[in-house]
Amino acid sequence: MNELDGLSALIIEPHSGMRASIHNMLNLCGLTKIDHSASSNNAIKHVGTKSFDLILCEYDLDGGQDGQQLLEDLRHHNLISLSTMFFMVTAEGNYGKVVSAAELAPTDYILKPFTADRLLERIARALEKRNAFMQVYECMEVGNQRDAIVACIEGVRNHARYAIDFMRLRAELHMLIGEPAEAEPIYQQLYDAKSIAWARLGVAKTLFMRERYGEAQAMLEALVESNKKFVDAYDWLAKTHAAIGQLQKSQVVLSDAVTVSPHAVRRLRKLGEVALEAGDTEVAEKALKQVVSKAKYSEFRDPEDHVKLVQTLVRKGDPVQAAAVIRDLEKSMGGQKNTAACSAISSAMLHEYTGNEERLGEALASALVACKDSAGLSAELKLELARNCLQNKMEAGAAEVIRDVMRDAPNNAAVAKAMSVFEAAGHAELALNIAQESRQQVIDLVATGAAKAKEGDYRGAVSLMTEAVNKLPNNPQVVFNAAVAVLKCLENLGWDDRLGQYALSLIATVRRLDPTNAKLPALAGLHQQILKKYDKGLRSKKA
Image (cartoon, rainbow, N blue to C red; front, side):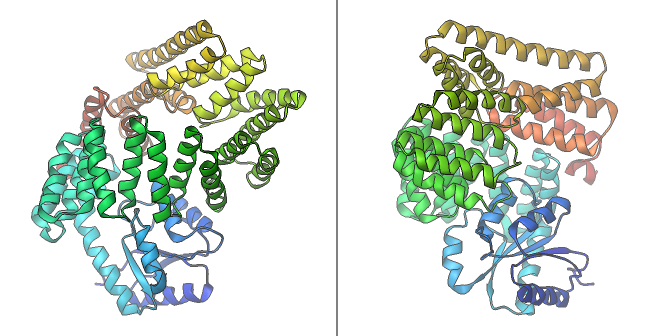
């Protein structure tokens, strides 16, 4: 029986003739379930509605986004599963450029021109590796990281040819669940045996996670010096500089990384943000203009990029360009989530600079209304709005915005940053009162959810905490207790696939927001118990 029989494939290729040619080759290889996309946006719609075993994507896509940027979007937004095989199709002349920028690497590259036999050989090789890792992927998909680690250990024994890959994945799993001390010796063993650069980077990441920034910095600087194209090392070095307050050094490193890999939107965005915070409006303007331009072709474009560019241009003293950016925001992102709020906040920045008090007041009033209906608007943007309100004697509006930021604050540093906006305006006592009030509101909300669960109203607790997470997605206390509510509901009322996925998402969010939370192991332990109870884990399947 053909091992490719039954596999599904998606061809992402702008030219109809090439799509037909690849389709015919896949037919010759034994694949019959094949879908087509002519653009990146259409491809995202496809993967949003169904899963694929195999994706073949042309690197040179039409419309401004290349295949590498599309892969970054798909991975970052978890639109393709761990087991999806992603092949980048590219001309030989582009190969060096593609590979040098591929920190988010595809499964393999296929150089044009190629034959059906060559394509079959590459797919078969990738399928063999996927089958070896399938147990690990299945455990990871349901959030069973402990059993995934066990499967990696068994994989080293059973599939020696992939031993390095299993060890690397095991180390990454330890990092994912907040165990850098367990990951470090694995990375070190790999580096000692093979001198692999990514293994050295892994060691540096474990040091960063344990706040040993000096050691991490020295290791990362050596990595960047010895491998000028290792963009992941640049990113972590920039992150390390930022963690110890060295913004200018962070900016320099990010600029070097962008030179090596100029198409990664998230890196360009980070460079723009760091440069803006460091006061370098020239670099911020250049980076953010590229972000706005490149992200325009992505399904995941963010109107806040326009706001940051407006902020940069206003600080630079260029109101004409700032006004043009606002017009582009309204035209290109009309109907997008948060566009109204971003447009109003940007307009307020511009009118504050030009001194048009009447239009400034109108823009601030519109921004305050829009913020109430917004979802996922960044704290930085809200704080800028609050600052502008305070400057223009709109204390009540500023207080409401600051209250919202404090309720959703991920840590004490974020609360202090919010308080500083009021303190700088001479309202230190009001800032303290709002902080205490916001903290109590979160405590009361969590207590209400816990009381519902204690009374046996598990679905009521889930409903309440889900609504709380939607309003306060960055508050680790809220997200943690929402995860507990969902897990208790699953434990007592039976398995539900939708809630199971939601629990997984909430636990991952807690790990991201509060990786050193002492209660995380207990939360993860409860999750593992529930997975085993409903036969969702590797060990229970073996039994």
